[in-house]
Image (cartoon, rainbow, N blue to C red):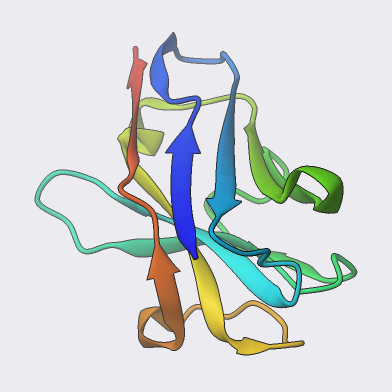
Length: 125
């Protein structure tokens, strides 16, 4: 599975962006998918995840109430809607698909087998 992120860019604080993670090669409809991010000088961190069937989502405390993860099976795509963006949301955002099938998302990077190349999100104050 190849994952390609898009939708990043430069936005003012308080603004919104929607990131997309499109899969090619084969479907990832049986895999949980998560978004991670890495800010300059910091470790990569979990942002949001969605289970293989879309019924369960989980979020980092820092983004709860502002970000929403969803998936569209017909387009083989997972989205991250980001609202009320803050300068501290500035990072490279990565999507990742779990190596296990029919599971829920989790925060452990090692459990994700497929990764995208990342998309830059910059929030200005």
